Image (tube, rainbow, N blue to C red):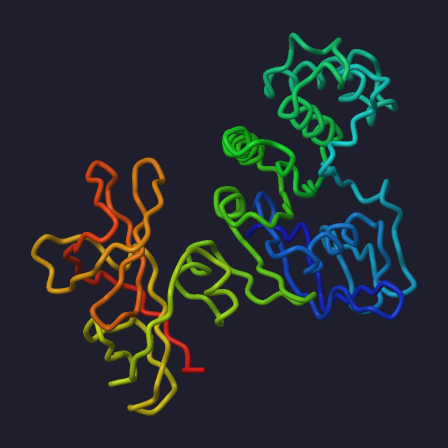
Length: 349
């Protein structure tokens, strides 16, 4: 059974009289990579700072490997928490070269041990040849990797990443995110990442928590967040999608203008209840023989796929992903079929 590296219970944090985090409960097991996701101002960075020991706790508690490190009136110093932290701006020491930045937290060890650890990590991050260079001589991606190596050097029980890729361009962010994820998984480093980018969270996290207004709305796997959102906010924040009005025909079936959709779960409302059905772009697929027809009103090229916005005969619109080798024009009529295996519905507003 894996050990819980981090356990947060009923956490509340405030700035003066303003509650920033309210009633948050979550846990991360050893070796997991978890992400806190949400819009700006939702409280996710405050949670990270509270875990690190930079913010006091007004209610609840934070435990690392079973030992309480934060609760009202009790705060273990950040340097005694065995944490590594990578900040949004990397926070490298500008007067130290790459090697000295990496070994900064290893001053209690002998020189030979410092050299062994630094050499191993610099090789892992691909910067062995740059150990004598200074931060201003490095690209943003290289600086980010040095900051990660410095955090890993002290062999922490938990690494905290605060929007670590937000200052990088899209291509580098995706590539570096994969490299960092592979590195953390290969070394079984328990990690908590804070981000506003759901693609980043889904690519890296075994577990993702979506926050809103200081509360944790849903803590789940990426798959469940996408296919089984807990409420409308989760459904709207995660992925692309539109809502189509329907009527509950049976506990697990909804009648809509595009046909009857059957889900895997029973809904608690009586038959005849008006509902809004969430349709993702992968729920509506191209089919030359399909009974459904839509007019293309918008398109967005995404490389291997094109995301089309399609107007149905009723005037409502849906989204659909088509393979990009066939480029349809605005105004063109296309045939479709429904392939919704995870029907998500909410009581109509």
